[in-house]
Image: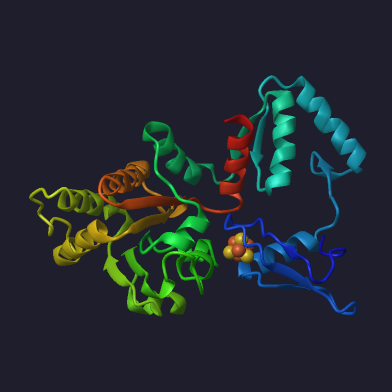
Amino acid sequence: MWQTEPADSTLTCPFCGLACDDLRVATDGVDRPTLVNGCATAQQAFSTALAQAPGSPQIAGRPVALDAAITRAADLLAAAHAPLFGGLVADVNGMRAIMDLADHQGALLDHVGGDALFRNLLVLQDSGWMTATLTEVRNRADLILLLGNQCTHRFPRLIERVLLPTDALFSPPGQRSLVLLGGWDQESLPAALAAANPTLIPVANADLAGVCGLLRGLIAGRPVRTNAIPGVSGLQLEDLAGRLRTARYTVVIWAAAELDFPHAELTIQGFVELVRDLNRTTRAAALPLAGTLGDVTVNQVCTWQTG
Ligand code: SF4
């Protein structure tokens, strides 16, 4: 694709799950083609992929011809009763091909980022959830609650493409409220986020579940000890609960990979329940992200093809 696509065609980037569809290969026919609009992650990933030799198959650590490697792999698969396909850092087409083979062989699948992915999937399995697409968040959210502090690092164009795009259909980005609930301070704030003047509520990831419980109590009108979590301002939580009640469309976003502590799925479940609570009187949705290396893409393909 890098070598043969016309200069004015666009590419959809497969690397983090945001599926940025405005990447372009620019070439003047002399120098090596360059990637336009790709973030640093995309630049590095495309460069790495293109720099690799077409294939360097090995058997027992020794380089062999591709035909020999395929024959050996086919023999191993034919003899296996329960093969496991790991890694799975693939785009949609790659994962479709792997699924075909797995289906044929009765293989199990385990993405390298499966731990993070399953923090989300356990909640989906257990109670279901109300989620939004990236486009819906971009066009409709008027209050965005960002959990933790790694979403914008793991999904480098999240701010530009989803949180604060230059335009949106139903919710002007200039009037959008951002609340950052995590390990942020003014110094660590990316400039693009700082420009939106977000509300910072510093809280350790392990305390997010407690914060969520207090918010749900406040929204339900119950008596709540808002200062119950050391270091978290009760006044800020009361203010946030009020904003959640009056927002037209709240979206709660997290990257499950950074919620790396025991039983983190219960934290996720709390915020999924918060979204459900809000939908009794207004509109709200979750945007569950995982860790990247194509984990969300791989999971979507599994869902389409196997349910
Ligand atoms: S943000 Fe993600 S999808 Fe977009 S260009 Fe970067 S790696 Fe690719």
